[in-house]
Image (cartoon, rainbow, N blue to C red):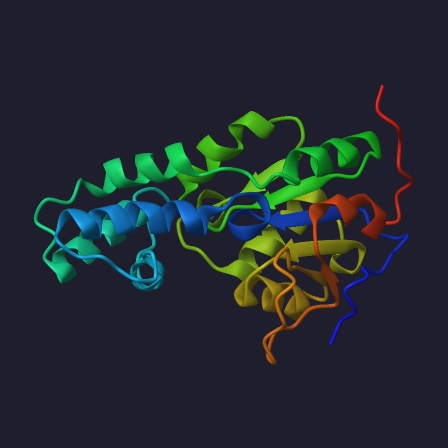
Length: 233
């Protein structure tokens, strides 16, 4: 098990951040939209929409278009559950984007990274249109964004991370990937990229979770990469 105190490496040239879980609270926004949809159809999910969200993610995984993947999955879910009065998939995605928020530690961490000249790349593991919309306010703080569009229309966590490093011109051994989910962390480990598990909730790790170090906040990002802190102003 990795220690909760993050390691420090002096050879890091780039940090990649998973879109879901690291940058934005995508899960909460999706569950909120699904919960309200269920409520309009006489259901009151006790888990707040978590089970519906997991089913939606499985349906998304079966679709490959870079734009419209969420919308198609939402409409398929509505058909499965008989949600006759559900909004369109496109409208549902717009509602998710409207309610989704970046975590509180994101902006300060990215500001520190810019001052320390530490490049940050976002790996957009969600519908490409939503990724672009939600990261637009962070333009300048994020050096590059890789979504399904850069992968030719299909999503694969390992291919996305490899693409991000290739575009940055940085070898895997000189990168750190920050993520909350198993798929992203395993993708980093399989490429020889140091995997930092972002565990804001201080939860115990799952036995098969592959990570090199653990972070409790993105505030430690610059320190993790061995960059000296630079005072603002």
